[in-house]
Every structure is written in C-alpha cells, then in structure tokens.
Picture 1 (cartoon, rainbow, N blue to C red):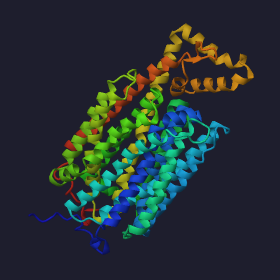
Picture 2 (spheres, helix red, strand yellow):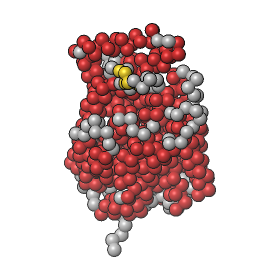
Picture 3 (spheres, rainbow, N blue to C red):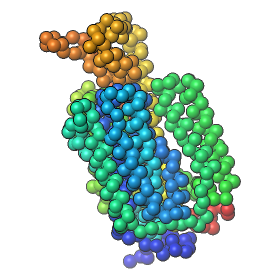
Length: 569
C-alpha cells in the first residue's frame, strides 16, 4: 500500500498535530446543513411570499439575496476571526444568529401593515440569518481542512461536509413545502412562516451540538483583522449586487444602477491596492499566482452561479409562473439536490482516485447539459414531471462539482492558511450563488418586461383593456376599491405581479368575467424569459467545465503551495 500523500508539510506548531474528531465533524456537518436549509428555504416559498406580502419583482429577489449578500460579504472576515479567536466559538455564535434571524422572520407583521414594512422586517431577519451563515460556512470548512492531513482523510471529510451542505438543500424544499400545507393564523398565505420556525428549531439543536461535541481549533499565525480590506471588498460586492438586482426595476441607465457598477469597480481596485500593502491581508492575493487555486476560484464562481441560477429559475417557474403549491414545487428541488447526498461515497472514491480537474469538468458539463434541456421545456405544460429528469442531471453534476472544487481550492494551501482558503472558497462559492438569482432574475425580468411592453404597444385592443383595468378602481364601490387597487398595483409592479393576478374572476352569481388583461401575455413572456435564463446558466456551466478541464494542470489536489513559494510578507 502506498504512503498517503500528506497535505500539511508546510505546517508547523499545534495545527500540524490537530486531528479531526468525529464530534467536530458531526457538529460541522450539522451546522453547515442547517445554514444551507436557511439559505435555500425561500426557493419553494416565492409564490406564497408574493401572494402574502404583495411584493414587487425586485423585492421578491431581495428576500433570497438579503440572506446571500451578508454571506458573501463577511465570509473572509469570519475566516480570519475563526483563525484568531477559535472556530468553535464562531460556530456557536453563527448558529445563535440563525436562531435570532429566523425568529424575526417568523414575526413579520401581518396584512394590517404595509407591504414595505412587512418586507423590511423579513429582510432584516434574512440579513441576520445571513450573518450567522457567513460565520458557519468558512468555519466548518476550516475545521475539516485543519484536522485532516492526507489526501484520503481530507477527501472523505470534505465529501461528508459537501454532502451535509447538499443535504440542507435537499431537506429545505421538503420541509418548506410540507409545512406550508398547515395554516398559520387567519391568513391563508402566511403558511410560509412554519418553514422559518423549523429552521429556528434546527439552528437551536445545532448550537447545542456545537457546544457539546465540537473541538476548538485556530491558526492565529500571521493573521489579524484587516478592516480596510473588509470595508473595501464589502462595498464593492454590495454595490455590484445592488446594481444587478435593481437594474430591471430602476432601469439599467438610472443613476443609482450606474453608480452601483462604478462603485463596484472603484472599491475592487481599492481592495487590491489595500491587500497588496497590508502586513496581514484579509486575502493573500499571491494565492492566485498558483494556477490550480486561480482556476478553481474562477470555476467556482461561474459554476455555482449556474447551479443556483438554475434553482432560482426553477423556483420562479414552478411557484410564481405555474402557481404550483410549495409541496409540489419541492418535488423538483428534491430531484435537484438528492443526488449530492446519494452520491457521497462515489464522489469520495472518485476524488481519491482521479484528478479532480476531470471531476470538475464532468460535473459542470452535466449542469450545463441539464440547463439546456430545461430551456427547451415550455411552462405551458402544467406538470412538474417534465423538469424532473433534467434536474436530476444538474443534481448529479453539482454533486461532483461541489466536492471537487472545494478539494482543489483548500488543498492548494498549507494547513495554517486553512481559514483563509476556506473563507475564500466559501466567498467565491456563495458569490456565485448570490449572482445566480440576481443575474438570472435581472436577465429574465428585463426580457419579460420588454416583451410585455412590445405586446401592449402593438395591440390596440390589449392597450385599451389595460387602460380600463387601471382605471377600474376609481368607479368601484368602497368595499371593492381596496382589493382592486391591490390588483392594479400588482399588475403594474412587473411581469411576476402581472402573472399573479388572475385573468378572470367569478362573480357572486357564478358568472365568469375578464379581469386582468395581461395575465396570458405575462405568462408567455415569463416562460420565454426564464427559458433564456436556463440558457445563460447552461452556457456558464459549460464554460466552467472547459476552464476546469484545460485550465488545471497535473494533479490539481497535489499542486500545493509551500510556505516558501508564497510571497514574503
């Protein structure tokens, strides 16, 4: 039997002797699973959010991204904090923040409050939960990396970690869809709150497990808080995401959107300048001089963008366009995420025996193939069955890609840079995740809005019917005026709102009469637009596959950066 390849040759001090205990691995796996459940839970609830809260398209996108943005912005900082002050402490704090954030989300005001107030409270809960997840993702991965010292041990541990992450995405739609069947108070659309109650309970259990079972680890050597770096990268990423998400609503040429893109570029340049001059940088830019790390970084962003973009497009298709129940929508997400759990032992063996660049390439190719398959399926087929097979293909691809890209990135640095590497890997993965809904939402909603406007402009009868519908509240009775104004506001809010309002209504005498003239137009426009979204995801995934296959050289998991090869600080 050959001697196992060691991954910590450059590591000295206590970190070199730290071994990953079963309790620590269990605590890390449970925590990252719960964090992923919290991240993914809005996917099957978008239809209920829109019906209950009366959200605009941008507000609906921000419900997911209010969680994802702090995850993306803060992961590097939490990687440093874990290295400095201990990862167990950070794991516990992250789980507690999830408890607090989910509690606030559950307490979102009812229909008596304005849409703006209700959405703001839900966003606040999502933001706090996102901060907790930002602590959990890099901390758990750093615990795994710091406690494993051979290719075999690390491949197995990372496969378990990745399976736990995927399990969260698998569990989330089932829990959300099942609990949404049960009433929550008098509002029939408030059932989404039960999903947040479930996450709250899981986060509380995770906190207890972390306290009891997890062992502490840290790697403070050469690490310190880099506030200039954190501030500049946070402003850059937030400005970019704000501009992408608000573009379809405010207009791509609006001052706020243009300013967002400009700020993103300026503060990214400032971040690079600050990091080059810092004695203890938030991110060692010389890590990107290593080909394996740099290629894995780019592939991570592009591939994870494609994956979660697929999930977001599927969520909107099933829940907001086809108006399926959360439980029915969850069937698709089980297919999308189940394979990562089922294939855990296979992925572990593949990572041990084969070059991870081929695992990456195959994984991203499958994601791309599944996306292009989905792009050819019309939403006019009101069944979940057609999307199951292509989503299974995407899920198999994700199972291989997630573990491989994590292994490549973490294995290319010495163990005492595990916190930085895991934080960077988590940031890149979740930046791709955050871009997925933002970009696909922006592309699809812009395309749908343009198609609707074109149809109205070219059809005089449709334009006249829309004008009468918009004026109908003025002549309505006092009892009907409020509901009519809400319907008109929804139709005018954008394509998703126009699709949510029924095309006909049934009167008290049983007669069915026309109501929303844009219903069918909006449905078809959204169908075409989100098919384009799948195409964008597919092309991105195939590009990531080519990058992995031809950009990585040699054994991507053994191209380790020795301490001597890093630039002197």
